[in-house]
Figure (tube, rainbow, N blue to C red):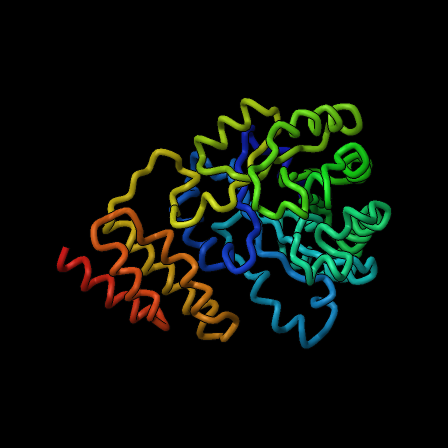
Length: 330
């Protein structure tokens, strides 16, 4: 398999991996409404992250398999994995590669305390030598599967404070195709504005150490127009959009302005896919789907009342009935 990253036109745009958000249901909706023939090669999807340790446990692997399910319409798609155990990372990446993903991304930026406590996620910022060995283990695992797909890393600018000069060069010395930078520290979570001014410094380091590595900026990107502006201003190769995708399945299309009816019908479709892929197989609770309701249902007359009713639902049939009743009265 060739390295798809080398074929992308710049700027390219990426769907941020967000736990309990960018699951297969949401990705299918985004693939349908945001990817078309014109922009297909410039939009890259990420899965939710999956634990390398879990994929090495037979029982846990069975429970986690739904995270790594995807459709062809989502390509190019990258599987994100986290972990701090080299042996488990190798085994996990061998398995993930065998599933046909276009690439594997190692999460070195998650600030969740339970993840950091394992030494994984952004905990690896504290142990750069281990971080490098984790990358090497990922390559070893992919190779053992008889495949060749690119490895990338998503991280932050530091743990308790900005530490670009010490942390980023360690990653740039490794065999990675892409480095995504969430422009905040672990300590900052998402509580302060992203430090986009730091991207130019990171670009300079990349150009000096390994010009072949692509850089993706992440943090506070509101929409595709904002993404294009940040690409022009800060000099990275691609932009990752996180919270800006909520409630906007057309986010990567740019200028699409959806009517209330159009938006609510897509919400019905989204919940139907969620039911089929995640609720009925008992992978996720319907409460996870409800995270999207506020984003879809806002800024129109009656939105608040409709949202209150939707929050009481337990499946897609109930959602469909409530929305159809609302649209009939509209």
